[in-house]
Amino acid sequence: MHDEVTRAQLDALLNEETGDRDVLAALLHERIGLWPWWDSAWRVIEIREVRVRQLDVWLHEVTIDGIVGRSEGTTLAFSAFTRVAGSRLDRFEMRFEDTLIGPPIRHNDPHPFGSIFAALMDRRGISRREMARRCYLAESTVAKMRAGYLVPRQRRRVVDLAAALEMPVGDLMAIAGLPDDA
Image 1 (cartoon, one colour):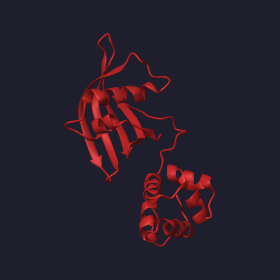
Image 2 (spheres, rainbow, N blue to C red):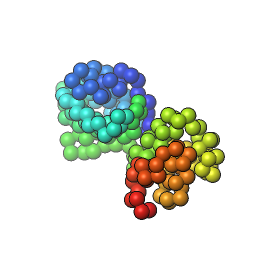
Image 3 (cartoon, one colour):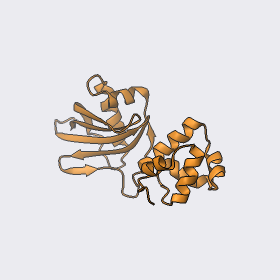
Image 4 (cartoon, rainbow, N blue to C red):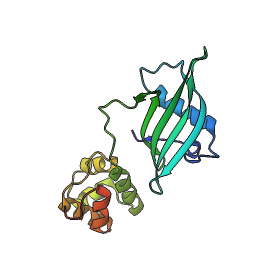
């Protein structure tokens, strides 16, 4: 998904008590409006509660409870879930009553390794081309790793990446979700 959000939208998402609920309602309406089958007569009319769970300094899971309604007065309770990585929405889904709605199944949820790997490269000023050169990889492979759609599973590959990032191999193994003895 990887959709950038504005600073105001990010503040509304991450500030449980002081976030602007109107901005949050507009963001939710915008997200569900992207679904081609969504009936645009339904609008987010109330945000009741926002719960933020910080997984890391840059990674948060946000749950939003509220009400959607139509002009004739019909309403439904909803619960929205999104994962925020930096200033991007990595995942977005909504539950209406007992029905969970999210992106089509063909869109795999990216592995968190991608966001961390991208942040490490960016902080060190390493371009995609440079990382590919240092690790003897194709640039497309590095791009897939940055997006979270390819996670290194071989110790040899993790050793090369860790050396290029100038960080301990064990740390990168943990980020990739691999056991120490892999």
